[in-house]
Image (cartoon, rainbow, N blue to C red):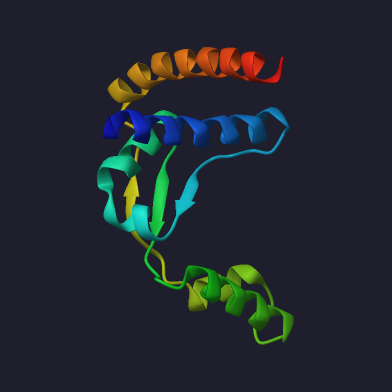
Length: 127
């Protein structure tokens, strides 16, 4: 049951990433932060496998505040570019997950089914 819930959540994330890509927004990797990213290697590996792209987990517990501080440092003129601010102020990553080819192939088949079922439910719900 837990695995099915986890897969459905991750497949939903893939649906979102696929839409970005279809609309011309390149998605080359994922940066994750917070609870699940820090506490569940199982879910994070599943995400990397389903999305078929690397995922990096931010080291900082306050990544959003740190990002805001970086932009403020650039806006105030303390640093010239956001890249410089990131280099000087960034906390880096504590862990990364790479897709495992064998898992990626299996999940791709499950994802196709998920998409078909989702389409059936959406048609049934809105007709």
